[in-house]
Image 1 (cartoon, rainbow, N blue to C red):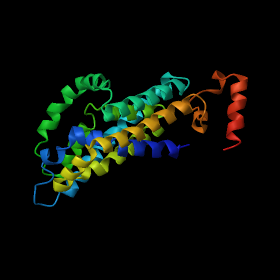
Image 2: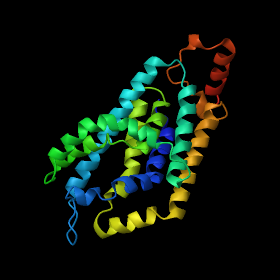
Image 3: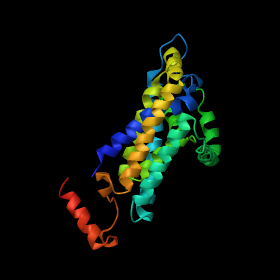
Image 4: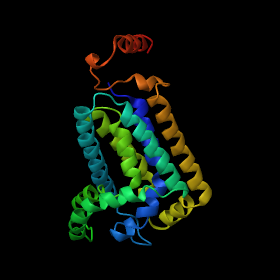
Length: 247
């Protein structure tokens, strides 16, 4: 069963973390030729680009979710890692700790092979090319995406993880849709220290909430995902059974 609370949280993580997206890809609209100063944005290309990016995020989630479901008997370790990743991302956005840079460098190995493909699609003059480019840019090394992917992976199963990553991407769309003069104002706004601090604190709360649940203090810790009944002790099994009767 879909846990819409986790999906909503992933959407919020994308929205509040979009200050990082704007920082990394703030000039992407002009670079792709999707908007020309003084002219109306090419909304068809913007929508296609975002659709391609969201599709890549969902694919990442589906793959990671399937691997996690097959490899691990319980989601608790993944949820602890997801909480820590969100905390690290919050510190990254606030500028207090840059530890996630090493993770982005690791993803750069894959991007080295994909970047030449993206260059062949430039300049973008049609929606199909924008869709293809968005599908490639979804794999751009990004600490926020990796943090969200870990969070999605911790939800159990490929379907839930894909939906969570799609929701995360949807949360980043408003910031990425800001183009032209409006885009410059949005970039100025989200790069303000106070705004970045607020967004970082909100993501920090998501991280701490995830850790709290992983430690068995929240209702969502009872969603065992793919854990098999045989792997639980009788006491644990009875505890989960008791939880489900009260939901």
